[in-house]
Amino acid sequence: MSSEKTIYIKNTLTGNKEPFLPLVAGKVGMYVCGPTVYGEPHLGHARSTITFDVVYRYFRFLGYQVRYVRNITDVGHLEDELNEQGEDKIAKKARLEQLEPMEVVQYYTNLYRDMMAKLNVLPPSIEPTATGHIMEQIAIVQQIMKNGLAYEVNGSVYFDVRAYAERYAYGELSGRILDELKTGSRTLDGQKEKEHPADFALWKRANAQHLMQWQSPWGMGFPGWHIECTAMSSKYLGLPFDIHGGGMDLKFPHHEAEVAQSFAAFGCPPVNYWMHNNMMTLEGQKMAKSKGNFISLHNCLAVSIHYWKKLTVLCR
Image (cartoon, rainbow, N blue to C red; front, side):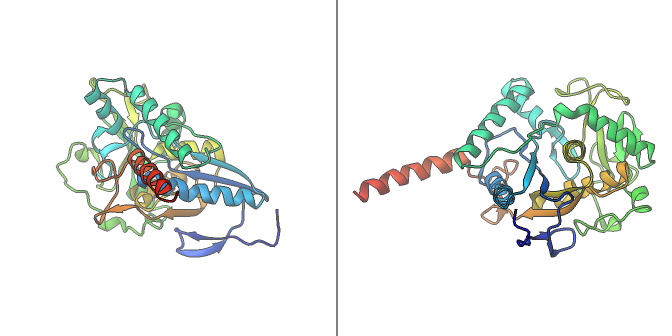
């Protein structure tokens, strides 16, 4: 590895381009938020994955040993992610298709990997799943509660944002101000349980009909969306690690919650450099499965192959 090459990273946390200084000389630990596997991968997934594939390849080209962790979200991501309402996206797909949730997960995980391979994207070093790390998530929730920064209500556990803000800075990554944070509606199911609208779920109580649930110290339930990445990144990369990546739409609430959970549980930041890619848009809106405004990679590749074949015929 050349000692003359200085890499500069646009750190979302500070808003500045900063020289990259690895925690361990010659090594890079990088965590990137992967897909929620309940539907076809689309161009938006490709943009984020290719962005960090380039980062991964560049560090390797320079001679760094890179541990690249990219997760698979297979539980806890609800339809209304900001207000933490609605069905689990995977459980809903399973219910509609009359499948087991893990059938949905396996099918779309395989499809995602297949599409990434067709795009010549390298696989990560580790590709952990949220359901494979339930115990780690429960342990972190317990530590946050022990530190006085979470509370339990009727089998659900919520992060206490106001108590956290008395000890640490809240909102530095996203630029959100605690006093200005509002929920979409104060009458939403579960909002009455929260002591403050900005509090977010670390663990959610599950009713008998919920398809994905596990035993916990608070009863049967499932983890909140944000806690999975804190559990998996800290397990495989330690704290803090070098780089955390993802789409800019994840800065709030997801990544802001990760910062808070790390300080609340371990007393330190999760990462030294935050990197965010911009969004793919369609007709001025973020491309997303949940919005239904996306171009699937399958269709995109099929069209590309069709026109490539026509071009080769014309060029003969």
